[in-house]
Image (tube, rainbow, N blue to C red; front, side):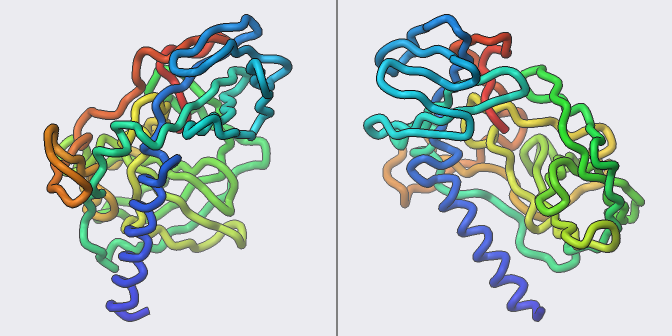
Length: 278
């Protein structure tokens, strides 16, 4: 791939990211996560009562099964499970968190950050404990580890999920200054163990950088790099208070400690207050 093709490919990815995040029911539109129990409860902004029945979310007029979602007016109501707890997530196109996003600040594409690593698959039933921003500890499927050199240091990154769509949650020395407090990276190892590409240009901001009520995982200790990774997305660019429409200039937001677990969502089923989904 030529330098021009590399940059064009990255630009397409970057533009698609912004479209996805700011879509009417995209990541930035989340306004609430309500943790439910078998006991009926009233939820702010929603009519009727809501409860759980064998893992399904039951309202007065309809049921949302696991993995399902439904439109009520302009709101998208989505089922979310975390271990044994279930929540109703609400996405609103009119959310202030969506309306304020004018861009995603990022480092220029740099082919020097498209690294090669070696993937070592984990055992089929292996797990790793991940600490989430609301204090919850989740046991995630361990895909394996990726050995590579980053900034002159030999590292071994922990990856979760399936090998065909692994998630690497990592931090580096730019966090809290140049970049948000941690970032995500998706990798693929379709052929199993062996050499894979680790392109930090595709590092992206976690959902909790865009809206409250998400419970993103923190980087495991092994993924906290003591070198700067000046590649990929940096921070959300938001419209300043009082500014006008989508063409208005914006300020970089959330580069230090913003976007954590928000307080105030309904709680049920033993889940922590203010939680949502990563």
